Image (cartoon, rainbow over all chains, first blue to last red; front, side, top):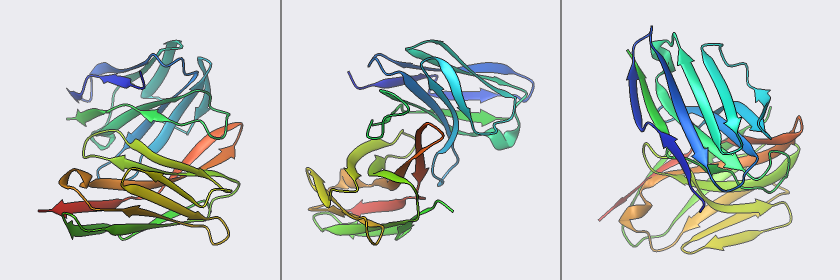
Length: 115
Length: 114
């Protein structure tokens, strides 16, 4: 099974709402990633978790709060977002974050619209 | 500055024809180079991964080349199909801060017409 699943597929939320994005993998991978992708732009790294610990935060605003409850799950908690946060949010995983050649497997993404 | 540049930005070809996409990079230290295919609204799917010692790698109708000296790569698609319509993203991996960091190109949007 080389699948990374993400829920929901689509999410529309107001600027005062609190919502969460979920990501799951059962490949035994120990590194998980959140990316943000705007239309016609490449993905931008947001967070990296390695062995369930946050190892990289690419200066992401605090209205985005990641959580890694266990080695298979990764959440992204959203609060007080802005319309410019509307984007495709991609989750990815790899065997480890440190090994040079480990492949990153991407999920299908959650299309987020902030109104 | 670590950058990955791709050309052309977009390309239209007829079904059955071949095409070649280009990628130039200025990433250091270099770990490997990857080509991904991304359908609209979906996550990227890996096509090939090449280290600096590999010159070419194939995956079905996709063949990637790498010239580590000139820091150039290409992706050749043979006998294109309608399902090849997608964005093709060149990604260079660098080992930084104790983990693999991916530097993404802006992608080439390929449209295959019947």
